[in-house]
Length: 116
Image 1 (cartoon, rainbow, N blue to C red):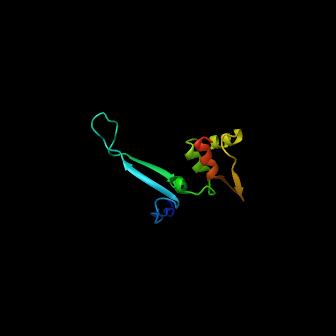
Image 2: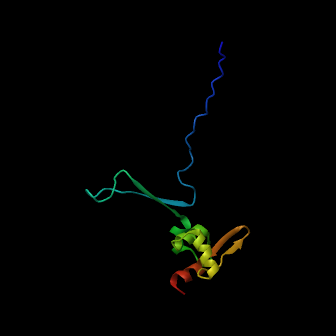
């Protein structure tokens, strides 16, 4: 006689009630629409870019403000490794440490962007 084992059921996945985007992130969704045959667009696809709030409002930040690594990488359109490499060579200003947090001064980054 075969013994029957109890049925193991997995808990159901709950739908999250959290906001779709983490706080401090500004999102932009633009639907790409086809302009006609051969245009390369697809009306079913969605392009979504995530821009940190500090980057979106970089122009309004005071020179004494500080931004973190992802913002610096986005400002200079490079990877985070390239940011560190440019700091080592002197092409970017050195960061400052606030406890365990590393950040760059906005005024010094503006000077680099202006070519000074």
